Image (cartoon, rainbow, N blue to C red):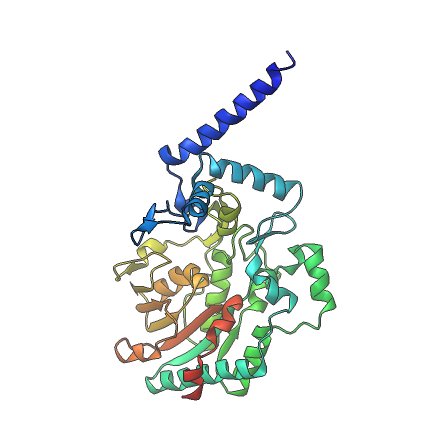
Length: 360
């Protein structure tokens, strides 16, 4: 009996390793569920010679592909979130069910402030774009989408709040808006319309604002442009619980969890049509035709996706572009009444022109 237990233990352990290991070859892993590229199976031979990195690369492949990988990740994430209140290298677990994107921590704590020269370079570049847009008869506006913890910082973990409170906090957003104001460039500060709102304007389990937040941003931007538009105030917000949160997906790949969302009780499906080949939020170019008046050119990032129904339904023609640098000269082929530059707060450094652009 004394030998039976270690033999049984070793047998179970070896069998489990065989099942998990062999399953990597037989049962495919849902690569899309983790939102990243999984390690490929390594070649045995490279450039006519044995691949000396084969075993290291095979270890990386097996780690990404072993059977039930996502099940074990999900169970571990559940314990870490609910017991230890800890997320991952990408996700911060906040209070009251809030998740935050770790890439926004530097902004929140005031640790990645751009230099005066960098802010001036961004503002000068935007001033040139504004002048070029005016030459085509379009008014340009800049709108920074605040990081979620800029609006809902009270739900960040206490340790991060302590760092923020003890720092002489200046944000890149404040510095940019100050520089834009000095140059007479139109901008829309979205923080007031997103703060202290009921319901919440951001998803708890996603990086971005929800339909209500996108609506508030849409109205603020067009009000600043002084463009008449449908504000959807007469349509009550409808609550759904069917939004797949990106942060939740990072913690629980393939788990199928969803988050709350709020949209006006309005039939957007009959209010506009897509005229581009693609209409996915990830498409670089999206064009729409709606029943409203006027036209827009919108340079956007992922935050802009939730505003597409509002702009598209309220204007005749809208062109959405994700590529950087921004091609204001598109107005020569696609005339518009206004140019909207929407960018997430965490991405402000991406607006710094390269050395050649600054010198030129």
